[in-house]
Length: 243
Image (cartoon, rainbow, N blue to C red; front, side, top):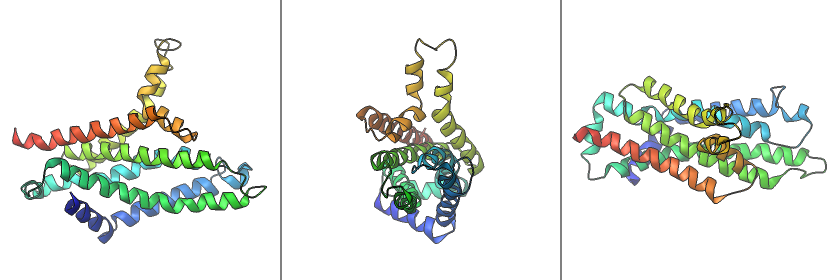
């Protein structure tokens, strides 16, 4: 697994993939925080990072599939997947190596945004007038969310040879799991009956919970289950070559 992890990290940073992903994420979140009139902190008048944490899941829906789309689709297309799987390493180790490499890249993208927190912390009146616990919880939620998106992106890449198809499929799956169940819960057939249960199936519900600064074991277990489920499906998709 470590060899795959190092290979993927080198690939990210020896090309423009990693730098573009990090740069685009920081530019877009910076504009949300400081430029866009609907969300920028300077006009809003409150020491909060809510705008950043509301926008980040949607920005990740584009950037993470763009990073993961080549993971297996490119290797299938070029034929190097056969060389990869003949190494003395299990399919699961290959998947986890790629998974943790992508997760580290996302962590590198998130890390500079701590400057936003420091800036707002200093701008607060009085200084430090910001919900640090809520911010910490939101960052933890963002890492779990990124982990789920990466697992989804790897699965989409594993079931197709075409990188564009892998990208579009990953975006659709991420959007569906994040938004769809919250919207479905509002339908008359579910409303005031099982709407809460339907809402809890979606990623958005659990991300919102953690973003409030309350780390509930149920939310953590949910994210770990989503990650494990898509990693398992990716393993099945890779194993299908033996059928």
